[in-house]
Length: 63
Image (tube, rainbow, N blue to C red; front, side, top):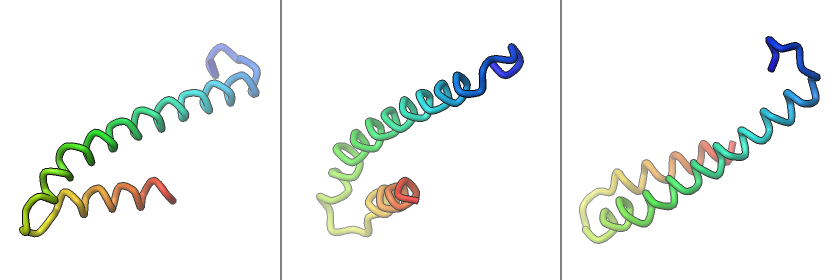
């Protein structure tokens, strides 16, 4: 769109739409991870790196 010299607002709207799709996809992936990998990791008394990974990812998402 930039190379085609499209209107700046149109480009910005397209970027915002793409970001929303990526956020949605990331949310679905994280939910699946929590429901599978993290759930399994919580069923043991061992240290829980899966839980720590999920918490760090949530922290990044909140920034």
